[in-house]
Structure formats: C-alpha cells, structure tokens
Length: 226
Image 1: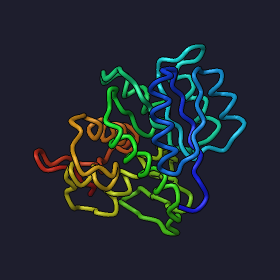
Image 2: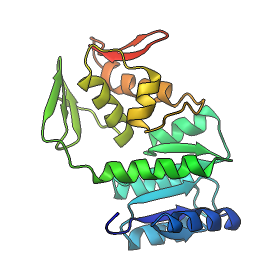
Image 3: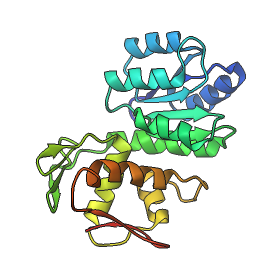
Image 4: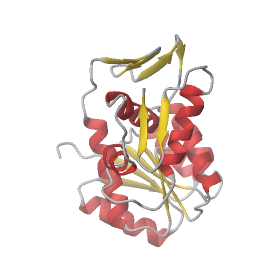
C-alpha cells in the first residue's frame, strides 16, 4: 500500500467507533477518532486526511455543519456520511453540501470498507490530461472542471465522475448496474435511489439553465448523453 492513509472517523458512539477503528487499522489505515464536532474540527485543521467518515448526529456541531466546513477547507478529500436517518431529504442535503457518499446505519462493515477502499484508490489515480467536448459542454480532466457555453459549472467529485462516465460513452445507454460498478465501485444494488438523486443533480446543473438537454433517460435501461 505504500505510505499509510490517515482517516478521520467522527462518531460519538464509543463502541461503534472502536470497532470501526480496529477494522481500519487492521486493514493498514491510520485512524483518528473524534467523538464530537469541536474535536473533529480541531483534528481536521491539524492533519491532512485521506478520507473522512462522518456521523451526522454529534454533540456541539452536527455532521452537516462539519461537512460544509471540511468541504470549504478541502475540495478533494472524500467524505462518507454515516447516519441512522435514511430519508431522502437527509441524503440530498448531505450530497448538496459536498458529501461523496452516504451510508445508512446499521450497515455491513464489508460495504463500508469496500467504499473506503474505492475512494482511497480513486484519489491515487493520476489525472487524465485531456478534455471531452459534448456540444457546448467541455469536461477538463486535468483541472477537474466543467463548462457549458462558457459558463463554469461547479460539480462535486461524485457528480464529476458520473458525468465523465456518461460523456466518455456518448450516445451509449449506461445501465444503473454499470454506473454502480464504475462510479460507486459496487457490484450489487444497495436498494437506494442514489443514482436517480445524482442524475437529478446533474440535470439541474448541466441542463436546466440551458435550452438544449444533454442528459437523457431510456426508461428501463439507463442514462445517456447526446
């Protein structure tokens, strides 16, 4: 693995945080634990973390406040939210403020660690030094930027990855299963509507402000760009 990845685990349930840290450490990661929002802010400011596991219900500062704070300070660090709340509005809020993933408690540790590995592996990949053009949209892989008709469109890391997959396969319908495998690195459907949520995010940013739609749905099959 080379140099150890350092992970910040923000979780106020002592028993759960102990188990997660033991498993992360056993898999070769260094893990710092914060039991409340103030401690989490302090640690995040003191260290360069490769990934953050962030509970929502925390003393002093909740996970939503921390996510905004962390994202303002670091645009790239992967943030995985952990919460007992599985309602769609909680997930939408988490994604809107910069979370990369959202796992509902109780969760299988196998799934959690699979997602941790996915984000850490992705952060090590070299940036592609090229661009893709679709109509009046430009995707720049070197700078991780997207513009349409000369207008800059800010995207989260996950939105950028999903848009890139669709653009690289222009005119080809991408199934939900393929999106799960290539964007979330999951070989199984978790039964959530995460993909639909992210497609909606992209449409609001990529299509809604413009007269011509680029992102399309083929009902029962998947999504495509043309």
